[in-house]
Structures are given as C-alpha cells and as structure tokens.
Length: 73
Figure (cartoon, rainbow, N blue to C red):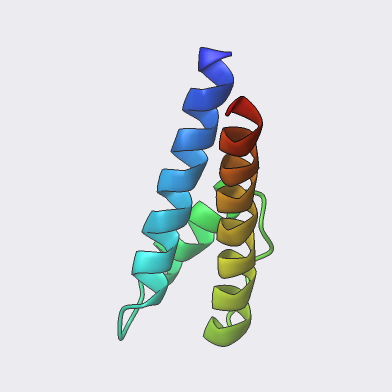
C-alpha cells in the first residue's frame, strides 16, 4: 500500500510542477512535454488546451484523495 501512496504522491507533485510551469509567461516546453508524457497526458502546443487537461487531471487526483479520506472516517 505504501508504494501506491508514494506513486500517487509523485504524480501529484508532477502535476503541481506542470501547473507551475504552464503558469509562467514563457513555460519551458521541453519540461512541459516531459512531465505530460510521464503523467500519461497528451501534449498540446496550445497552452489553454494543455492547462485545461492538466487541471482536469489534478481535480481527479484531489477528488480521489477526498473520497478516500471520507471512506476512512
């Protein structure tokens, strides 16, 4: 179980890095592409489409965590 939790934490950190990078005035496209690929997301050169995809993924991660906490309580 700890391994799954560590993997989810890494994915969450990668998502946060990706969001931070995409919010820059001039994001490093190589880093954006690398993190997107690592997270299994399609890469888009359109920053709005890409940010939308990333935020949807982040939302899914946080919702899963919230549901898990609710089930534990």
